Amino acid sequence: MELSVKDIKGKETGKKVTLPSEIFGVTPNDHVIYLDVKQYLANQRQGTHKAKQRNEVSGTTKKFKKQKGTGGARAGSMKSPVFVGGGRVFGPQPRDYSFKVNKKTKVLARKSALSYKATENAISVLDDLNFNAPKTKEYISVLNNLSLSDKKTLVVVEGINNNVYLSSRNVQNTKVVIASDINTYDVLNADNLILTVGALAKIQSVLN
Image 1 (tube, one colour):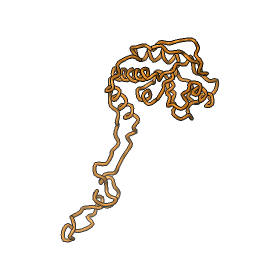
Image 2 (cartoon, helix red, strand yellow):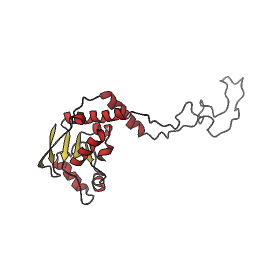
Image 3 (cartoon, helix red, strand yellow):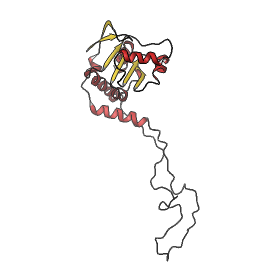
Image 4 (cartoon, helix red, strand yellow):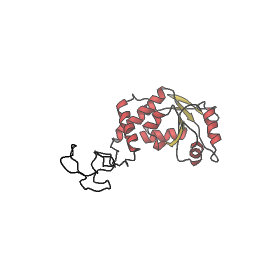
């Protein structure tokens, strides 16, 4: 698949790049995409939820009424889960939600997600993307020039670029990542991908 390279003003530079078929032209595997996205979302969970059990609730363990003769059910201490202020039965405890997904599975998932975007013609290639200083207005201007200001976009740059990142930070529905950190969830969550030429080369080296 061949795409025209544009500059930050949205005009064609006359250059063309070919999206490698081994990355952008594979037959998508929906199951590996599911596994990779599931792992990504699980890894975002802090897992710090906690509810007190009856042995952790503060209060006396004194038996507050006699065993028999009250006409009601027998009861122990007020820390029992059946009373207000008592402990909780089988409440949430701190845990780690992460799980393992094989490297080859994750690579195939990313290739599948990129292939979906390629078939949807939702990929734009920029010659370069750089600002002299963090300027949100300039970043928005780039999106307007590419006619993507109303779309959810994922911008992939070759390496760490603080000016671009800081310029995009206050703009809704857009995210900037470096090529080596690209993941299946971000690709599928975006309506359009914006790749720099350098980022495209980096993606090839990472996924191959």
